[in-house]
Length: 90
Image (cartoon, rainbow, N blue to C red; front, side, top):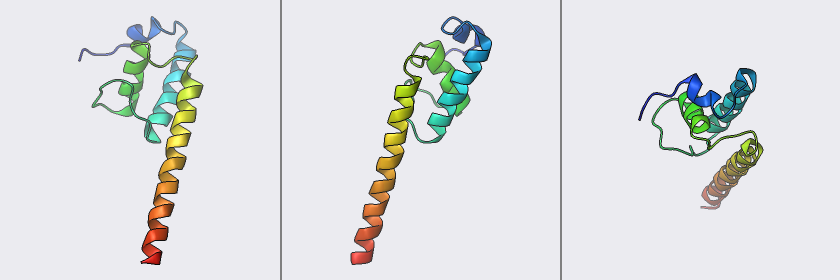
């Protein structure tokens, strides 16, 4: 995949300050376990920038992506709790 540049991202979000905040929010989501929206084997920041440059992450959908990440985290927690409960019963 080609390199992602700030200029690629600025086509989607022309204000640098807002771009930084959008990228930070997405990086936090990825670190909490969110699934990347594009195929990416890089660190979270590069993945977030690539998603923004591709138009997959925007200010319009960042809140929804955050909710999905929180639901995923809660679901993982509940699964672990069930496994722990099953082990204690055995």
